[in-house]
Image 1 (spheres, one colour):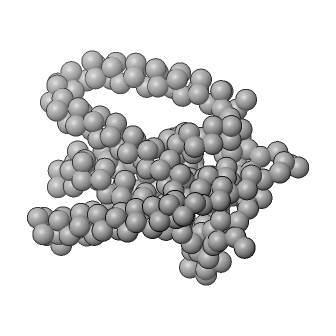
Image 2 (image 1 turned 120 degrees about the vertical axis):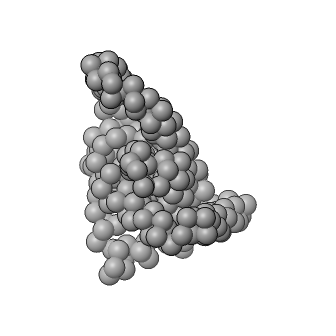
Image 3 (image 1 turned 180 degrees about the vertical axis):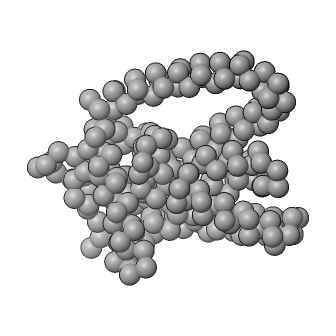
Length: 240
């Protein structure tokens, strides 16, 4: 009998394709998943406790509000909110988003089927599963890469990607729970690191950018153009 959250999902790709079975868990993988999940929970509690003790409950409430905005609306772009006066620092927001991604990945990896049947989260998770199928159908190249396909999925800056739908993609591609969480963690840390680095670079050069708006706009335009070209090339490869 399949474990909760480890059954087969309908195929995410072309009609008639046989869905990949989820890779059976070995005893050490099951134990690693549980211990890593517990460690993630303890780290999250310790981090929030540190924020509350160092900066007060008001700062903790603000941080949790930013985490909610990140989850529902803007993703890791919330890191740039740390450039505003009075907001949590970019690195604090980065750590928060990574821990949130990991907590969701472990939660969904451990009880995906049960959560989908719940009244509170069921409809939302079923919509997330639908988004995961849509993206995999649009980008079949992700399926061929398996583990790194999940990493690429979470990294893609398109609607419907992230740790939650990434958990569904991991199941659709047949990854074990610990492999799925590892892929989501790799993508989450990578994105958070570069967004945080960019946020601090912008903050360090804020005065120069304000005094030389033409230079700032020109540099930003070049970076956006290069990023867009690379992004389109990656998407074309994933569509084949």
